[in-house]
Image (cartoon, rainbow, N blue to C red; front, top):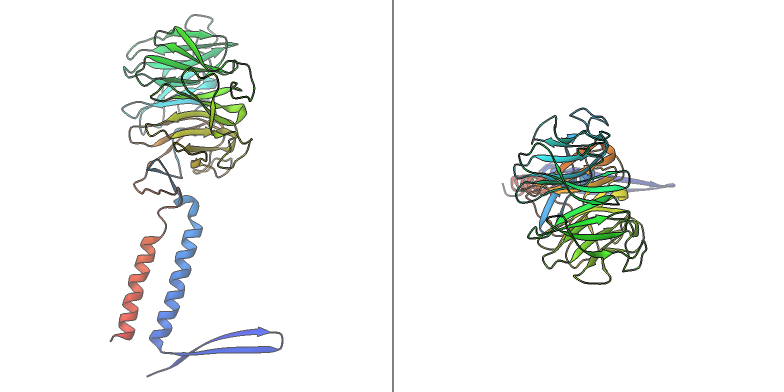
Length: 390
């Protein structure tokens, strides 16, 4: 039997140590292969951790790298461009509708299209009843009617375009900008976030005022106040959730309550999991999970029902234009397949984060190199069987 020597020499000052291990050729091969396998798997995981993260919330995971599905060609007014994208919504055919804020229009992007088509708008400055300026929040009802909040000077309005109609109509006009709009579960009532009036109002589906359901006591940080509210969500009981943007918190107002309860944030401005930096648009799902745009932290987070800490599901890698980065995101939406869409305002694009098939209850890293580890282990088994069991 042939012997080989594996030596490790370490020099420390004038002393020299030699460690000699006697092993066979197969044993040496096995030992080196084992070290290389462990080193490769470890380095693979560390090198690709950003691109492999798929975060879980309410049993759903999303890829960390987004795909541009609208815009992404710099600011402009061409039909393959956006200029400060705001509200977004996806219809039942997965067509994307974008409030192109500074271009005063709503653009429709069919799935996979490289250009959008004008759906409504480009009428700002006409001084007519057809004037359509600075569209922001946007939503559909079950009949396919599109509702958009627009503003001109200090006047805000909710306009709607019925399915197949050629022109829009005005439903509500108020003396403030409106950045949040949501229907209740039965679409009997419409809730609007009155941004500069620091309150949320409830209206009938015909546009008649019902009541103030949150805030209404001036700008402030007390629990009976709001400070520039943005996103609004409503649960099955009629409780209202408000993205209280300048207070960096999410507040829940139950029906007929005279003050709210903080359900997320409210611990000062910051980027910890219990903090926000200007929360914007917000969606609540049937499980009670809140999905929130954290504008100045350049991330999308979710807050599971009953939790106070958030989980980042998109962005969160700093301000930028890489596929895993966002730059002042402002609105979000989901399609029928659960994919996440983000209005990435200062990158002039809409990013789609596809839902994955691999759940991760911890919100950590999935798609780690487990398959590679299995492959290496299998090869090691072959080497060992050849060497030791022949």
